[in-house]
Image (tube, rainbow, N blue to C red; front, side, top):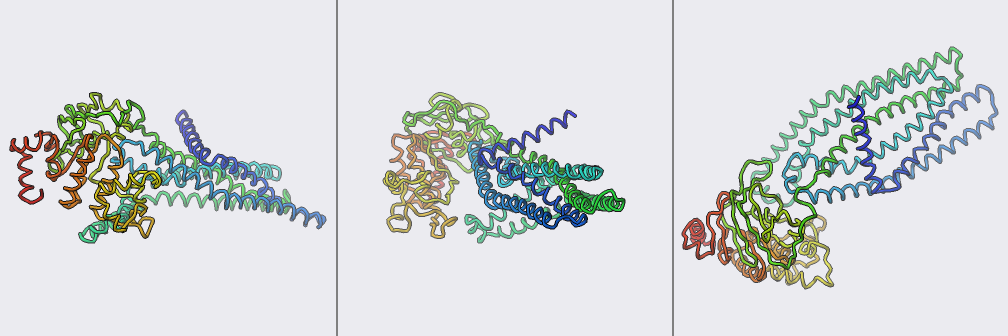
Length: 598
């Protein structure tokens, strides 16, 4: 009993929770939706009483004129009700639904913006987030629709109960018995459908991924050159076989319960018709009563069944809303707007003290007892082979993750004491796997909407410093050109090197005290790379610069170089010191020099 009460409270709480979002997105919509439910009173009385009036008038030879006026009056009420519902469904619902959907999507975007990065590497989180985003399109509206149906059903049921009790109360017993049976079947069906859709999500995600691989442009070249398209076609076919097998096995129970729902309707309606016919033959009710009762009883059965399915619907809503709440109730450990704010103009020193780190949900130790010092205003380089832990260092400086052991100090204070958003404002970063977005070039470089009146010089200076000036002077593109052809057929598609220069221009516009370049010039030719590195050293004058690169020509001018292997710092010093040490760095440098990479 206690468990049932708890479940009912949870269902009510979750549905009210979603109604709260609707109230914020479209304040008057709930009131209008409930108000339109009162058309049920007009519909029910008109539909049921219409037959009784006509048949009783003909049987009793009543005044034809009065009958016509009565019929016209009922039809007028039905017409008004129909007009109101048409306005509601065709005008009100599309507009308000869009408001609600937009509000919920925006809310989810804002919420997930501040989730820790670890959530994005959790497949279970992605499953839940995918469902939550999909549900944002329909679930809130479905909840309100269920509330509307509930209001409509309650008004209709009260009206029908009143009519039937007045004419022949025995019929209520049949109707209630059918409704109870329908409620039991509907609850079972709701649970089965939820479990079916929940477990099917992984198949949907896999098939959606293959769809993206075949139509998104960043995959096109490799798909054409390699045999990957065969792999993904086979992969898609395998997932298709798996999902068909899943559907085949998981829909058996649903089909069986659907059959039970249908057959019980047929049996109940047959019994009701036989009973009413017998009552007429027995002289208990008139022909007009028979017509009204036949109409109202079948309507009552339908409404009771609808009512009985509404309760499980709220249960089903609650299950989905619970998933939605799990996403938005995830509290970040890192992405919190509190702590010490950093003055972007003050010198910043970063120190790693005995730092050990593993990525969440893995046992692989990426950094092992690492000690580093990035002094204010100096030029630093981190070098080493792939998997050495170089990029992980950057992620920890940006506090995308927290260390497992040891501590990172910012100006001799634990990095966790600082406001993470303030910290990131003091750092400009070019990631190796940077992304190009479908937006105007100017907006991409500035990370906000471009104001030509006050930001033109900033944009052009960044473009020149990044080595893209000639591209713009040749009128190939302008700062207003859209990147990619996602939304604009005249959008520009830049080369890999040009995209990298654009990302560098974006970083330059951020007036930050720390500049981090994680393989920022990997797509450039050697001459462009040399020119860019020379320019970046000038731009970074007075700033703290951290370079990560496989090409040691890009790092040899650094004040201090850290050579890493397998998550450990093995060597440190400037280029000359490390060459004199004649260790791993020197060997790597000579190999690159002999291969004409430098």
